[in-house]
Image (tube, rainbow, N blue to C red; front, side, top):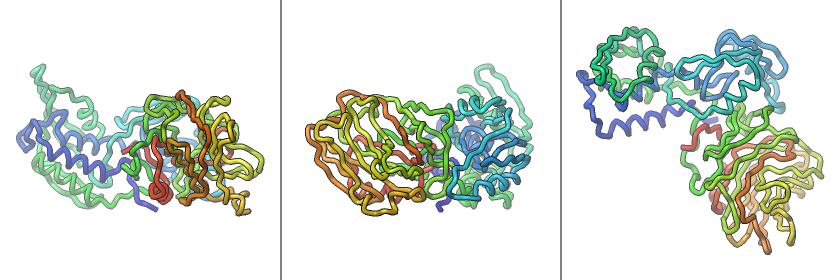
Length: 457
């Protein structure tokens, strides 16, 4: 299991260092004011944001957390979560079995708390799903377990437009965060030193200037031993992103990280992925599907190369059912599909099928009787199609079959994409490329641990 941090402290630290290396209009020392664009402002904003992005057993969104106490129903069991200590009771229910679908619901109304400490009351599951699906904001965040400001502190504010000065006696992160969040271009502030920080929950340091404060925070993050065990953020930054036109890790949401609009049913649920990361894969019950809007950036038409990579775990063992993982178009419009059929055998085909029933099958699947009834294991499938309509199908990192399609077409017109039509099982880590992946690249994707990304880079 990898070690993760919700918004990637290492990436965050790298961005701070990169900014610190740039020329700044204000030379930050003990005597200078700080402004909206100062690198120390960015660091302090990340340090003082409400830790709404912290993973726990009852929420895994990066936009807010659930205010306690709250009543939940975990896999049919009612639990009152009064404090963080009660998360363990919920986790224990989820850990009773690795083969079931973990489901959690709330006793409404509930209150959600955002990174800026604002609160919002949610009255129903429909309302909750609406704000959850609208979430597209990952605040940068440094855990207070790594670095914490010891209050009270004094901050002096100055508005050059109105020639006004203010003195703020601050006692909480929330007070400082909201001052920083609401800075305008002509507003400046100065911190009254000395102040003290607690690093890694143990060491107390005193700082006497802006530069000392920045360095102390950088040191605290660099040496931090805080490693949350639940994966969110960018664990695989920059890996095989060239030519990527659709990317859906299904990290407790249905976002396309390349930006296309996705329509999902209200009863969408999420399950553990192949590395047992909670709520990092999507579940389909045979009557649900997702629709991804066609855009100029993600369109695949005649003349384009394409590759589709995804992970699947079957839950249906009826041999004659056709279940589509991913398809272009609907109602027999000219397009394509990646699916399972005839004993859950992975296959790719063009629609409509004529001429010549252009399909490529995993010919080795039916040779293994265990695979026909396999509802326990995850499998990786990749299809590649080049400009000459030579199709290659890979399963679990190995090329299974190659077919040259005759008089083929994937359609001259862009169409919406559909995910999970008539499918009963789990999908994860969907990637679609406008290029042909090499065998080496397919192997790279096969060897990646489960993505719970909420960001692309």
